[in-house]
Image 1: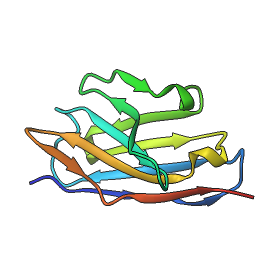
Image 2 (image 1 turned 180 degrees about the vertical axis):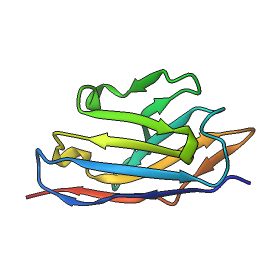
Image 3 (image 1 turned 45 degrees about the vertical axis):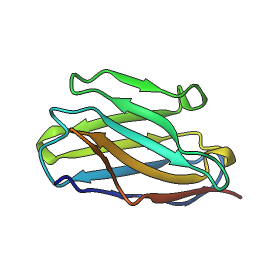
Amino acid sequence: QVQLVESGGGLVQPGGSLRLSCAASRRIISISAMDWYRQAPGKERELVARISWGGNTNYVDSVKGRFTISRDNAKNMVYLQMNSLKPEDTAVYYCHTKYGMDYWGKGTLVTVSS
């Protein structure tokens, strides 16, 4: 019922920046919270950032001050601006929302390495 597609991942050097995008198939962004999760090899998936339907944002402590989540309701898009990237940020990043049930994108890989 809801499809989420991430893009923007890639290889970046430590200290660099990257902007991830998530496109939703329906007008879900304006009425539901949107999340970015990440999962590194051998680790469990963790919530990185969340933006509510009202625009409030929350971040995991490890990315505060470096990452910014935003949305464009007219385009059904949510973004994650990632600055001052560190090797420990390396992971597959997933877009997520809950609208009666959980919806996940297939993920986009971010690799931070020199």
